[in-house]
Image (cartoon, rainbow, N blue to C red; front, side, top):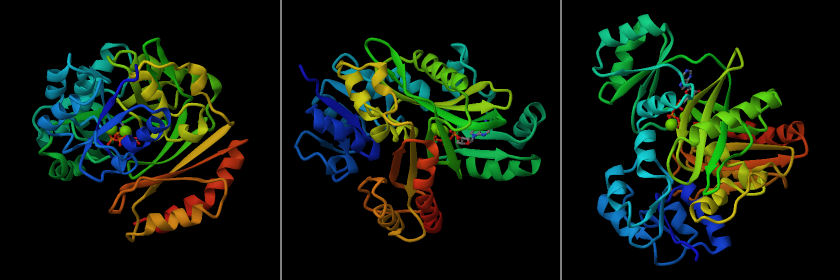
Length: 382
Ligand code: ATP
Ligand code: MG
Ligand code: MG
């Protein structure tokens, strides 16, 4: 019997989950405010209006479905724990609880033999304590909020002792930890899916961040040997297999100068670094997630690229409220660029408004096709 899915959050990830759910006739109910991006493309009365942070609304959503999933990890895990048994949780509440605290997440990974950057909890945010971290890790090091972090909001790179007062001003009222600087040559990511039959990985992707926000992804990762890419996929699978609950995970990694890999962080949900899978792979990360959590068939072969290369470019809010629309207009001039707008009412600088994808017979061709759009995105940047 087809399972009904309930989703905490109806932003762009929920919206892109609704697309294959509609195609496959999987009933899907969204908990978010009325008119949220995911609800705009799903006209039925099974949705719940409310906040995915509100306990009563989560209980209400749980009554409408067989499986509860998330598009965001910053949710109340006590309520998830409470509703366990009445619905299936994908991911499990314990997975969300560990991952939403980035320090607990790193502790968990290390205890399962997955290498991460060395980190240290800062129990009292004082100049003295941060100077002690600097003395032990050296500079630069990264100060991070343990919770509620995304798009780099929650990170402060401390380049020298002189940065400490400003770092404390910005992050001092949040739960903090410090991370040793990772001297990476390239950032990699792999989407991984836990299914009833096993843990499968998508190909290794190269991610390019600007101002701590993902800007571009290149798949397969450029300049990375097949051996390293394979190792990254195996590491990502090993990391995800330690978490309870079916569904998709995004695994961010650093490739260091000596060719070793560290896991940066894990998201227990669809992830920006996997958007290329919509056109790039036989089965997208969103469809793979739905298939995994509803116990339908999925094979690792279906996660492979359909063409030799895929590039994804994020479209962020820019210098004017219509900057993202100008990028789409430029994109429409090329028949090869696929446009994904998220239906967000308001554009703010740096807000993820949509993305573009190109697939091609070679990476060189994909790079040439996307370059005019990178230029347009840069022109529109706020
Ligand atoms: P996301 O939006 O992916 O959830 P986030 O806010 O949780 O991001 P991180 O992934 O921790 O932030 O860090 C953002 C970026 O900062 C990384 O992609 C990387 O470029 C850089 N970074 C993070 N940690 C380190 C580190 N220990 N050493 C060097 N660079 C780092
Ligand atoms: Mg994060
Ligand atoms: Mg990150």
